Image (tube, helix red, strand yellow):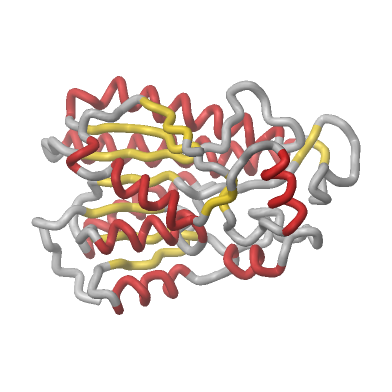
Length: 273
């Protein structure tokens, strides 16, 4: 792919872009003329992929190459590049921005979508109410979730802000993803804690970076079928008055939040229902 920059187009960095909401958001942004750096990581350490209770479709999407998303974007006339990177390695964060700048130009849109999800609990038990394998909270589970879902977004926002301010940028967008956690997250303890931290970090960015033309919001999707939803989980959602939506439906909201029309929306947790 050509490394010639096209300064008139906006540039996005989307993490966890090889599947589900990340992939759908990358495609939505590209369809609107945004050049997208799609970062991802394929490893059974993330996403609970060793859990036999999770459908094969979930494993397949988590282990997919982001190059497949990029090929789809390019086939539709868009511009994108895939880069596999372990976000738990803090030293790699500047490299992501360097790569985007080399191929497309400065990053103006940051989507913190990647997750190191694992279901852990303080109470010893084998499975949760949906039959998914639970593990006890350990240094490994909490470190994994905080590294990917909290520390990496913090460092990505910091690098985004540093470069934006240094070049005199006047327009920027930051979006985080959450499933809740501010009031606790039983049976996904470390995940809830990490998402609560990411929410706080993003809302802090909204306050501190507004003067530089940057908005920062957090999206809280409904149950999203990323491959893990089966008849049992769908029935459980319905019983609790909750909807199951597609990644594309969530991505459409994400695309709106990075548009000029959403310039006055910032510092908000947007709960989709």
